[in-house]
Every structure is written in C-alpha cells, then in structure tokens.
Image 1 (cartoon, rainbow, N blue to C red):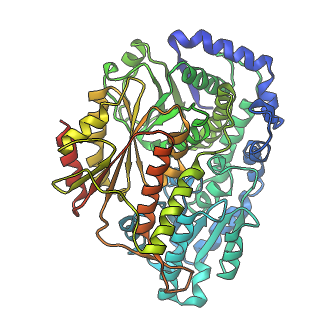
Image 2: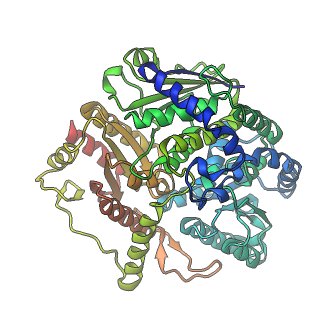
Image 3: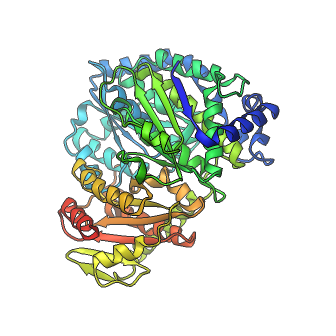
Length: 566
C-alpha cells in the first residue's frame, strides 16, 4: 500500500477533532451504505452518483471481456487508438497513456480533448486511418465537443476507407439509452461499451471509461484493480485517528478543515513519472468542491519556489514514486515556514489504481466537512447556456457578438472593464485587484502545444512571484469540464485572464456524420465557448480580462505579454 505522511502544524488539533466527529457520526459506514445524508438531506444527484464505491470490484469481473476485446483489435490490425472526449471521459485515459504508455504490440493511445483547430489537425492530420481505432467517449452522449470530434473523424474515415468500412473503426463508451448509443448503431460502430449510470464522469476512472482504453494499451487490468480494491478495503476502516490506516478519511478531513481555515489552494508536486495524474485530480477536486461559495483550488504545474513566495492560503501535496531519481522540490523549508505538507509515496506506477480511489473517497469526505454535495456541478450549465446563445447568434448572423477592445498593443488586443493606454497599464490595473487569498487563472484558448505551454509558464510564475498569489493554467475549452465549476461556484477570489487567438486555419464541423454540409467550424465553437465562459464569469461577479493575439506567432506574443509585466 502507498504510504502517506501529513505535517499539519497548528491545524493538527482541528483535524483530529474533525476526525473524532466523523467517527462519532459513523460517516465511513454511512458512505459505504450510500447514505445521502452524509452530505445533504435531499438525495438528488447523490444517491444516483455513488456507484463508484463498488466499481473496482465489479470491474474485476469484466477484465477478461476487456482483454479479449483488446486482443481482437490487435488481431484486426489496429495499432493506434484516438480517444475523443472531454473532462471525466478523457482525463483518466490521459493519465493511463502518460503514465504507462502502450505495451509492445498493443495500441498507442492519444486523446483529443481540444476544439482548437490546430490541435484537432495535429492529432488527426497524419493518421493511418486503416489502422486507427476511434473511441467516442461521453457519459451523457450529448457532449458537443465529443460529438463534433466524432463527426469530423467519421468523415475523414469515410473519405479514406469508404462508408461501408468507416463504422468498424469506431467504438463508443457511453451510458445506456442516451443519444450516442442510437447514433453508434446507425453508424455501425464496432462495439458499444455501456457505462454505469450511477457513476459521475469525474468518478469514472475505475469504470469502462478508464479501463477500456487501458486494456487497449495492454495494461495489466487485474493488477491495477487489485491496487484500487486494496485501497477501497482500507477506506472501510472506521478508525479515524491520524495514526490509523484509513488514509482517505484522514486526507479528506484535512483538506476540508484546511479549506475552511483559509488554506484552500491545494498545490501539487508530482514525480515526473506520474505527472499526468495532476490533470485528473484537478478536475475531481475542483469540480466536486467548488460550489456554495466554497472550494478547494488544485494548483497543478506551478514550479516550486522558496517558502516566502507562498501565502497563508496554501497546502502542499508531494506525490513521489519510489525509484524515480528525478529530484523533487524540497518541502522541508515550506513545512518549517508553517505550511501544511502532505507526502504520498507510491511503490510503483500501478499504485495509480489505488490513488484513483483514495482521492475519490477523500473528496467525498471533504465534501462532508464542507457541507456540500460533491457529486453535482450546478454552475457548469451557466457557461453552456451563454455559449449556446453565442452559437445561435453566429448561426443567425454569421458572426459572434463581441465587444470592442479597449486597446491594441502591437498585435495584442485587450478587452475588459478597465481603462488603460497600454498593454502594461492594463495588466497592472487588472492584477492590482489581487489580494493575499486571490488566485489568477490563465485560460488559454490556444493549441496546447509544448512551445505555447513553455511560453505561458514564465508569465504564470511572474504573476505568482510579484503578487504572491496562486496561479493556474487551463486550456480552453477543456478546462470548462474540469475547473470551470469552481471558477463560478467558489468564494469568488479568482481573477481570470483569457488568452484567445486568430486561428491560422480553421476546420469545418460536419452537421451530420457522413454529410459534407457544415454550419460551424471548430474555431467558431472554441470562440463561442470563450465568449460564453466570460459571460458566465461576469454574471457570477468574477473579474475577467481578455487578451487576443492577432498574429500567427502565439508563443512570441505571449512572451511580449510577459515582458510588458516585468
């Protein structure tokens, strides 16, 4: 079993008190019994969202089925799988791909979860379609991004292989009875894997949504599930002491208590071998806790610094892999400065299976401490509503309704409710709103390419070090399915900087699979979602500034933005 150590400093007694209350209220057994009153008196979106508790054991009975399907795909000559999904349907497979990679002779897995046309082209432009299996993955069966990816990739396959062969290159992972199931049958998909409707997307890693892609890569599913079942067994222990064996209860209680005390920026440092885990845990924690003016903000990918750069709103989690010689940040000085520090040690990469369940259970416990429902996402619909309105305006008029920029500084246009003569003035004016407990969220509606990420990191760290605030970086629109709920539902301490661009070349989205007709492009969909999210943020009282890059060299433009702030 992985080992966990917690240094809680002055918060230790408060966490111990909360753990005693959890024991007295029989919370662990009640969670196991699927008792909705652990969180709320109303069972809505709770009792029908607890299937993840038994998923590891249930899925053990389907290992042979999934392995047989993987062997069938290998025998059929497939060498590559491209998963089309967003949020909970794509993040766990992405962890599997980044952590394990494909075993020799199995299918290499890539994940398409960006509507940026350059990103779509980068993943689909050079595929050998004859040997590619597409995995269309969405619980609801209605996710607009996923269905857009499908229609685009289906048409590519029809054009290359013919309509009689195209369907055999697609499988669906979706809940039964939804629209994708019917669409899959009409398009003659090779296989439909039915999800468990009582498991929400962000809790679905240990279901078919995470495990079917893992089987195609050749992972040892029995071993992965063995680790998760061992963790699930440990989570049944009612011993709530800090020295007890139930790490998930200890972790969840600590995260909840620390958040209520103002330590709500959960900062992760991950061993490089398991760095992909960050994107999954970010969605789980943010979307589950960011509501009712509360929330725990995961901070992923922010480079380590000295203790003096961090405010009193931080908690640190270090996840290390035994045998990984890559140096990890030295958190002893951070701990000595009074910051809570949690260390988790994994024996090998298959312990990721246990970590999926550990963090799911801990998040459920944290939700109990925060008195919220960790299984709903009430503010996600706001962005969808505004985005749909933007799309309808485009379909009606042929353009997106936007405001005029307040200035254009060497190809970077600035939008927002502020007055400034230069880009530098605008940045300083906007960031002057930051307080000690604020965070700055960079929302990049750009292709998630290494050069662009490398250009954004110095901007992010400059803001952190100058203003002593936590920073996050999300690529749109996929972060809308991850941290978007928290952005609108938390205590309102975020400052949001959208970075958009002129797409060098756009791609049309077919209106229907197999049809050449198109009413909208990926670039328009991405831009509509940026417009919709900005409107939803403003409606929730959040400050938003947009920087629009007009030229083709996005990395150079980001570097100019950074230079203006120095």
